Image (cartoon, rainbow, N blue to C red; front, side):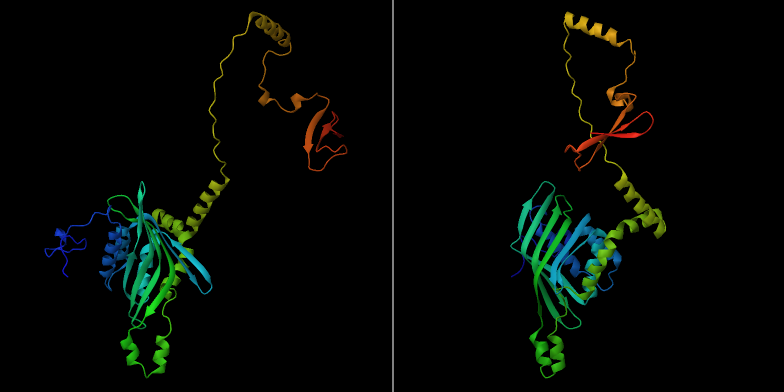
Length: 331
């Protein structure tokens, strides 16, 4: 059955410039199909620049990629940032993989204000291995993708939870080595762990160390500092953020309406003010008064509260300071 122009994957015989793309906003899965096509165009000469261009085309600048699976020693979860994503895909092919693509079945889409989420509970990552032996590996799990809701529609978060995997060996290879028990024993052994090669697993373990060092690498690349100076400046800035007190939140002041005093209260207050003005004309606010100005000159009380009750069962008692400088305990 030949493809028709109504097929979203239809390729015009006049070249790619005459092909009509399906709008991204209608089918976000089409981006996964385009990523598969880009991975198939990879060659053995593809260098780091090719992988950086691949990641720039399909992943946001602040994108994260997360893999969750369970090995023999327990569950694992690895999360890497945007700068480490190109290297992750390249390690898949360095482990003997010749082809890589993703298959999404019965996925669900949800639209938000600035993103589109694709949740596929039946996702399969298919890898074709050429060494150490010809094997097809199907890694099944749940894939959750979050795309940005714009024209580029790049991936913001990638979370693949692996449930199971299968390694398929052609019958023709088994028939060729049916009389060789050593080869059959080698064919019966798995070449991956939960569908991932040893190259990829070792890189994910290394990313646990590399991910916190991204700030040091970025500072070294930007300011051309030595590694020791980069570490000093990063630690000093983090220490400043930890020590710096939080900014106080200013509460909005509410203006109170002053009431007009009657003539009698005015005369009483004026009389009281004249009596109090004999001591001092200038008064300091109560908040600025020291502790010594609030107690008699002969005795200064310093409150001393503790969780141990005193003789009368009270939790607080005070220590008095006499003019001679001696301490006297008051209860």
